[in-house]
Image (cartoon, rainbow, N blue to C red; front, side, top):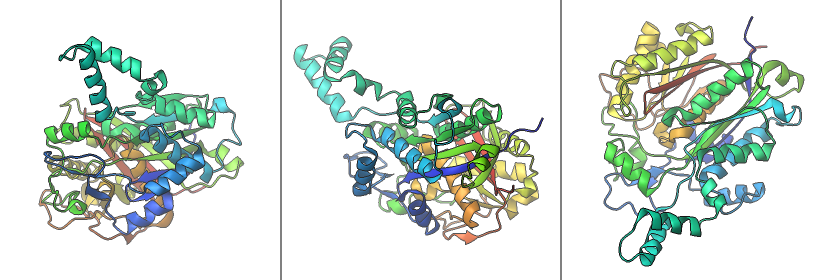
Length: 430
């Protein structure tokens, strides 16, 4: 029996270069960079002192007020709710379906405790216990000073529950944490849930806000971040010979997925068809992809097979493209292995060159980018591409957007732990 067709009827994004779909898309086509020196905490002494954060605080406050979001709500949960609301409003979500036939699938690592707050708790626990800080004293002080709701807000599943509650979603619910592939996998699992009949429609995507002293230090210790602090706007340079690491970013992306017959019945706007999903694991190392690209190759091939498309019918690949030396080389190798001679006819670009690496949210924002590329027949650029790398020899759409005849596109997401998730979207044809 043929699988039910699944379409995208709504999208919402919050990114370092624009809040809302059209603002983001205009900036992406213009090749804007969201990377700046960090100002919301002091990164002095760290080898990387920049990030791509959402800086339009006045606009964020307007969105927060319009949605009635508690001022104490975590940034990651607020971003998820805002992006979901944008996607839902764009397609008149929810008025047609029973709540138990709606699903929600979110990729996120959840909220974070501010370092300053942790230090205050540690200081108070020391005051009660002489000069030493014991684990029991710290936990006692932590529980005494933080109400239960605040503690719950730290859990990844809280983000999913918050959005589900706002939209009255009582069907399938899932919170996914597979590092950089989290939201791509969330979208893929939402697709599968609709195809097997568990739900008729789903909110799917991801949210991430981990630009904090702890996470920045951890990524610095891994050697994954760019050290180009003197020119942060030019630091993220995927596939460029002088790339030296990624720029940590934040944001959210949410899509509304629906079974085609339901979307047509309620006359929903159909932006694209989600045609294929492929997933795999490298089974290699936690922090490095397999150097032969085997996991990426398998996930791409599975996505194409699921979409019933030969490689030659893909016109554009939105690459994982982190700007780390190894990732970009291995991804290029994997694309060439999957597409053969067609690889050199493909347009390949990296959204991360503009918005940084938004970790759990990356896959959903990048899939939204693919949907918009299909809608407008425009390919966003890889900015900061200046020096060709002999090992990265594809068409990376350097520095300037271009028009293109796009019928089917592939979105790649590869993550720590060897996770690989790839999605195929096509122009919708009834």
